[in-house]
Length: 115
Length: 113
Image (cartoon, rainbow over all chains, first blue to last red; front, side, top):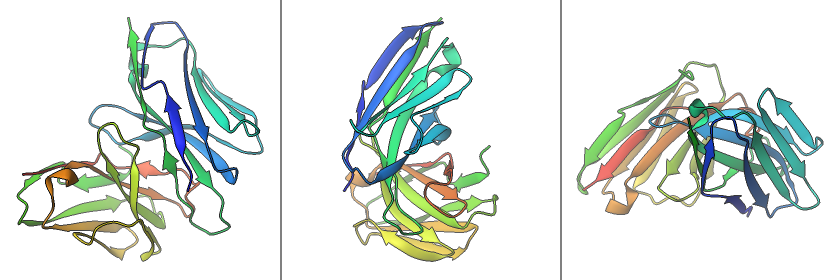
């Protein structure tokens, strides 16, 4: 099955700095890569996703890049704010041709933004 | 609010108890999921239901028994659990496919004593 590795496990940055979280995956059939943000006491919430026909996607301060050749994808947060502090999860989904595949998650990155 | 609610939010149970977790989605979605979230581990998919039919059972022990009476409700029945089953249990839903956005509930924090 798919194996998703995520680094770093913890990340501390000063407010206004950028944060980068990286993930690698093993299954070349994976073609959907979402990123989730989980705040304390809440379930994960999708913040951005990318599909294998796109190399980069941006939404305001958040961007995701995908390198299918190297099987890695990254989350970039610019101009970080204290409210960005949360656990971030990457995930990958192989397309097996079925209606319902599954998401394989990384272990998460605890991001702390200091004011 | 994501449109997915879970009850109870916290549950403490002994190893001989029987309890149930409930999930309800108000989004009109066709697929629902149970995940287990343990500290320092990736989210583990447990069960997937599509249009009330179980389409995946990810090698979950039989002490966990899911039920999906309709497309809006999902239950996880628990019996004779082990302390290592203590975790956050998350329910999610999506329109149809797994690569539709999955909306997660807040989870049930389960402690098995």
